[in-house]
Length: 163
Image (cartoon, rainbow, N blue to C red; front, side):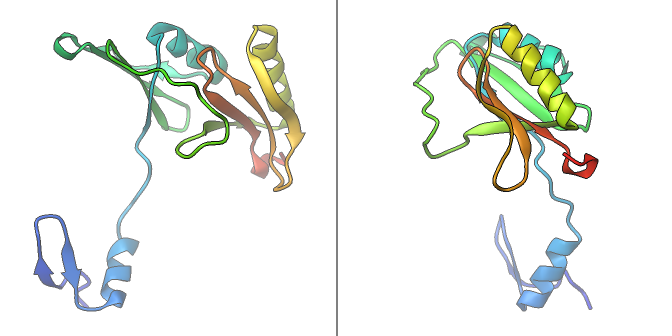
């Protein structure tokens, strides 16, 4: 069976003869989130935060002076990436905890003792811990902290390690 046999095409879409073909088409695709991007006020401070507490490895700084844009891609141990961005013309609105849109980024750091240790270090360094460490109703062992710009970051235990 030719799973890519289509009955019509547009610039962005291929129309398939039946749903079975479409289902098979998606099964052969590898899909993952490449990166998440976050605007920050202090690019260097936020980069250092992720380097210190989450072992991020920054790439080269990208600068586009004409539009006032700067960014770093930070890579983590498993290959996940976070793009920190800054622009000379940004709105910095208050970050409400209960709102639509992205609300936090979560890092799995190992076992419960790792969550405890990292949370305590972050707290001792003056950052706010807004919850935990604790076991949530859905079984996660986690804490939630705010970085220096009020962005929520969850620190979770790997459930495969008994977290």
